Image 1: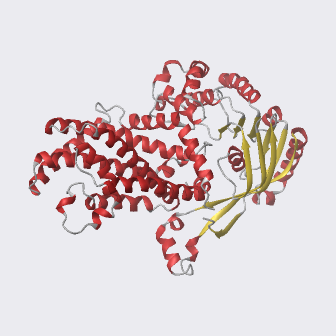
Image 2: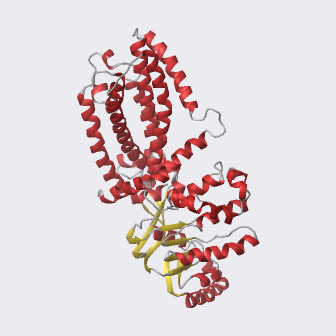
Image 3: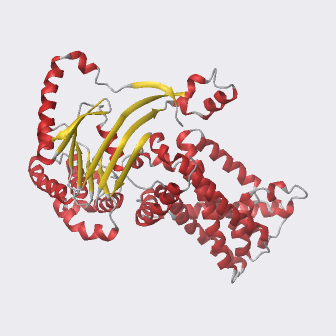
Length: 272
Length: 262
């Protein structure tokens, strides 16, 4: 049974510039007791997620909505096991497939087929599984003989077709998708939607972050609003989405609110 | 917290993903030499020319017999290049694969194994030179080859923990890769690769306390059918165990931070 339990997770992301990453500065800072060099000891730290708790069980389909920089992508990375929170704990049980960026693992000098194999391995498939699915992936992408050519010869739309066909062929227990699953031309989009739905149906847990409220409503049973790295509200999709669209209209009316949407940045001593 | 458990699980999980790192390692080399006729054999060719040129010159400078010096330098140089590539490429692993580390869930040492595997493949391309030289000087080591394989495995294990340590430090401090580069080139001259240990009278520190000397010896001596100080085996084996314990403790401490650094 797949499950994800997040309790009181906080994620602080240090942003190093060139000075604070240099060993010289660290050494100087150390030798003079961190007084003069003290300024360089500090990195800008973005608190991307603050005290988030979540409990996902098999069958859960969670949608994440919220303004830009609300911490959606960070939370997805925590749920995928990529970010281990600075404070709090995460327990993930089940095979995870994460689609955080389109075009992941694409090597433009390698052929389409090689990219399918590499990408499939990254997504956690074995070469045997990939070979079993190869003809299906190739057929769905409709790229034909182009799959024998280096990916750099592809148009943007062709690349998207290839990535989409590949990532939707996995059989994960936990599926984590960041927005932007667009799939090329209109005809392909229609075909793609069915395939995406099938993928969602065969995974146990889905977490989807998107700005398209319609997509969230269609795919998700639960929904959470994120803002400033905190979960503002979580509940049945219909209620949450309604509240969010109301508040969004409210936000547009209130310009000052828009400015405060930027994530909180604080300067503190680097944790490591 | 210096705990070894999570680091150990990362290592085991990474080894289990052998299909991924093995495939990526091969792809790395294929792509590096795509559209080139000789492909990775360019490394072999250029190394062969270096060995030929330097071998002849230094045998003359040091007034040693070509039949002694040439195989000595060949093996030493090939093994040294292997050690150097394991360590220098290892130091940039987390930095170069940062894009994947931030996108793909999974154990981090996968990327370290990919880099080590790449170095192993290149080593065996270069090893062709060894056979050519051995055929020329007519040395046959018999059982020594088996010992050399054990030595090679120990050297790989050792250099991979060193790569892991410098890789973690490099992810955090971006000056480290440059420091490692220069250290490795200095060590090349301080370690008996070009010169032989018996040419050094009295100053044993360069040899006895230089772990890289012992790393070289456990591969070089058996291949050349030469006598070897048992201490070289002891030191190389001991360092493999102690080094990995230390590296895993260190990795366990900072593993979760790496994704935020790259």
